[in-house]
Length: 481
Image (tube, rainbow, N blue to C red; front, top):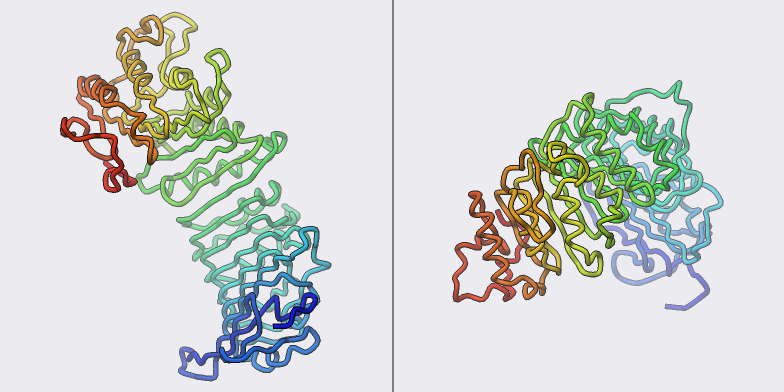
């Protein structure tokens, strides 16, 4: 193939066309595809398509059902799409990935002369804006709308609401890195799309996120996700009553699953234990965790349920300087399950972490001591660094026994014993967890009627003559009890 300067055929091809019957049995309805590579009619020879002479493109487009384009050339090379009518189109995938990182589109494309697309069911647009002609979707068959990486000439909230309004069959709605323009809140309508099953917003401006959440209220939506990276100053606007209402709706749909909260150094995620979650990344992640805690404590939030807290990859800290994240975690109500991932590169002071999460503050009289996670029943210890020896001392303290963490913790009452401990080291880290530690852990958990699981097997049933620290794909499988 000739190596000309940015020839069109280096950026796209159309596989033309194989016969595919539609529901009526008409063999004239064909499938055309445009993807990275070269023009290849009927899968045989190759020929270039010039931007000013699309040739077979316009000749066969009236029969296309599917059009997939991934383009990294210039915008001008896609102008043929503005002059082409594709009345049979059902699925459109258009991705623009320019070689020049600083490139930005001069303006939105006016696809297919604005002509109607009565059969269109799926739209995926990545990196390129369109002129939105509502009449193109008048057929009402749209089921999938996905927009991503659109930073200029993005659709507005009213335009998005109009698209949803004329698309009663819409099941998937997804925006990722789209600079959605806000509308006049006073005139925005509330929609309750009956068919919507997947609703996803990621890196959408806060004001637009709030308007979309306020206006799009599906009766049921099994997959609901919001992910934003915020600076600290944005937290006040983002953690609004609208988002709290969305959280309440999401948690109500958890079908008996535990509320799942994952905390890292730079993100907070709360999930309904199924497929839906709200995730806050960046500077406002800790503020997001505090917001989640307040929501779960709120008397007005009509959601009560068991909580699973997963603490991952926090930086090292000293006992006298407990991070805000840990302080917020300690106060989360109804925590029955706790997961800790311990890796030396992320924290060395495991005692500080466990002391902060599992022991009461020393301030005040013993009668005033409040135990974190008083309902805690299940703990999972994982990672590449063993916390078992420290955890044993925490268990002793929570039972009112002497421990090496300091003097006996005096309190008017102590939490009930933890019933299940799972130890799941990362692959290749089994040697960091000794048999004697596991035996001692089983003794103290067993005294309260509980059990220890080592790599998904009951430790008390582990044969004494069998090495415990050899890799085993069955024992190390994800899951367990």
